[in-house]
Amino acid sequence: MKNILFFLLINLAVFAQEKHRPQLHFTPPTMWMNDPNGMFYANGTYHLYYQYHPESTVWGPMHWGHATSKDLMKWEHQPIALYPDSLGLIFSGSAVIDHQNTSGLGRNGVAPVVAIYTSHNMDWEKAGRIDRENQSIAYSLDGGQTFTKFAGNPVIKNPGVADFRDPNVSWYAAGKKWIMALATQDRETFYSSPDLKNWTKESEFGAKFGAHGGVWECPDLFPMQVDGKTKWVLIVNINPGAPNGGSGAQYFVGDFDGHQFIAQDEETRWVDYGRDNYAGVTFHETGDKRIFMGWMSNWDYATVVPTGSWRSANTLARDLKLLNQDGKYLLASTPVEAVSNYVNSTKTIKSNQGVKTASALQRLSGKLPVQDFSITLSNAKGEKVIIGFEAASNRYFVDRDASGDLNFSTKFAGKAYAPRFSKADTIDFSLITDVASAEFFADGGLSVLTTIYFPSEPFKNLKVTATKGLPFLLEDLKPSM
Image 1 (cartoon, one colour):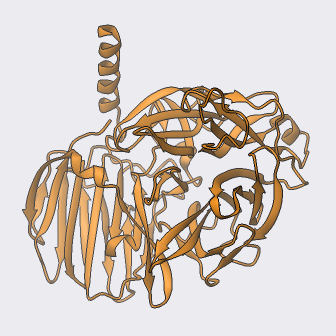
Image 2 (tube, rainbow, N blue to C red; image 1 turned 120 degrees about the vertical axis):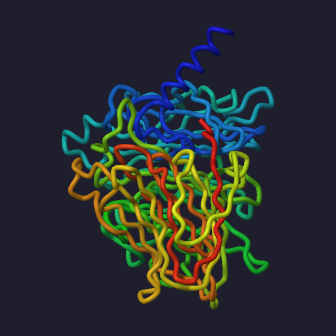
């Protein structure tokens, strides 16, 4: 036991010393990571699976990595959950607890955890076969630690669609059936099943809705309560085609009857307007809460960012809420409450006052009249990131043009914008910074911007500039890893 503890401490120390390695966010122990997969909560533990290539820091043969957490902040690495097989690589998907054992895969009263994922056959892709992606399942009888592939895979065979992937499954109680949202080129296709093994196509959505710069990937369909009634949210990740370039997550609000999704309108809305929040989906089995987590990168440059033995991190977990604004429903997201458990110290700072912080791990929050303002993060080398609001155009922004290393990609530099949706005469905001990222939440999370950056040394200087200056609350955060 002492040797194991010593090993863990050594690895934590190495993590802490690695340049650009986040201290508040989940990262793989080594090598490549992208989409979060199969997230659920059970017996006091959150399970996170993720697209993982254990042999390289660039994308390659996909596995499902696995990590667990008690609070969505501090994560423990687990053994790889799913490996490629004769049907192909293990692409993105979801995991459910089959409480009623509808699948018949449970044993001795144990409800199985069933993973639903895409089998992607690279040999078929190289041969030009359009049917290279099919849907498969695997089941676990030990709470999601180890899985057995279903002997009858694939459970949904490709109907002749080149992009046919990322199944997200949930139980639809009103119809006593499972519902799958599946990415199918320029739309989502919905399937239903009584047992997770036999599936029937129900309907399609999206051919004439939303942004269409790329494939409609990584969907998530779930109900939310608002104004005493149930509305349904459909998250659709897309690459390229995001509002500030590359990858992003759009969403639609509407109604679902177990057969068809009907959107409230044709407007395109985004979960996050920053450059670095993609493939985000929510955790299952979280009761009345809906908790979201995304991959904190962008396919425009994800494979070339200047990190060391690993690539990519996830966003902080976020609580989602649905708000009614002038008769239309908007999705808002805020960091989970557990962030507050990592506060070391708190102090008040004034506008236009420069502050040197103990580390790059901070949460800054404030409330001020609607006006131009900016938050500048910087270091002694003159590198900086600026986040703020432009009153004339009524939009928030993040500018990383001078953020440090930009040479790895011509698509990395630039200014990203987010519209302001709130009609209030004051702006409230919260900004959480890590050694290589900033997550900005304004107006109760109605406008969100997530960005990564790679300075030569951490940003430990902070300054808020506002014409009508007010005091702001600055909290020093301790690492959660």
